[in-house]
Image 1: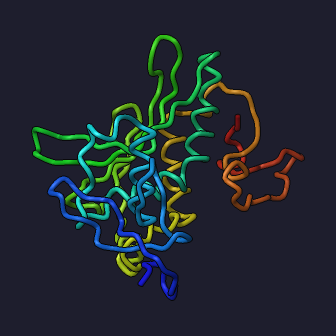
Image 2: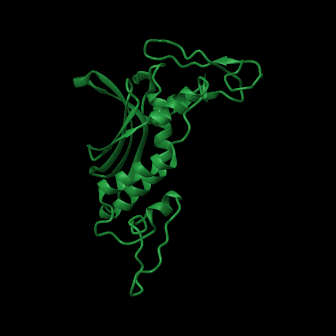
Image 3: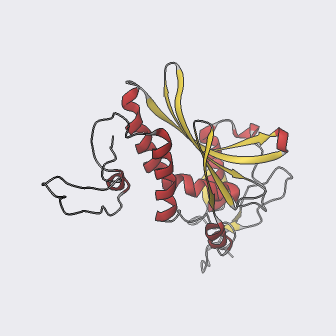
Length: 239
């Protein structure tokens, strides 16, 4: 039966994904619900991982995510959910470096040799011809994907508990990708990034960060004397 719940379609093609120990995914998918990448057929979860690795670099040089670990698929969904917000924060900071642009790397694997640990990472870098000017990274250990590390300019700025996101992922049928992160998690990551990059310092006023994220904006009554009190979120700039 197709891995998509309730789908009786035939024929079925096995997911071509195999991890570094060569264990296969083990799911099968019809033509409507599988994910084709570079002429191979995958389940939606592993197809998204393979596509992201191909976009980042040479797939043949990248060991695959362990079948038993949800780290790569969870991080991929979180990075997709915060991409617009983090990209917006870096663009807000880019006025300091005219001509700079944002480089996105959706998913890649790093080896922490001193800790004998594999971690999955998503990153955004503000770059120009001289190299990287500022950077944001989300880091998730493969063995313990319950804690997400938010790094800005190589500094750990926050550690976030992902137990609810993990529980939701484990409840899904095999092969299904993780859902996009909650609005609360997105706002927490983007706000942390904004504070760390100090985007309010000496920058022109613009659209608020909550407006950039498509979140409700609190409107306060004008303060005494006619000046608008506003909120910290409203005072944040935009691109």
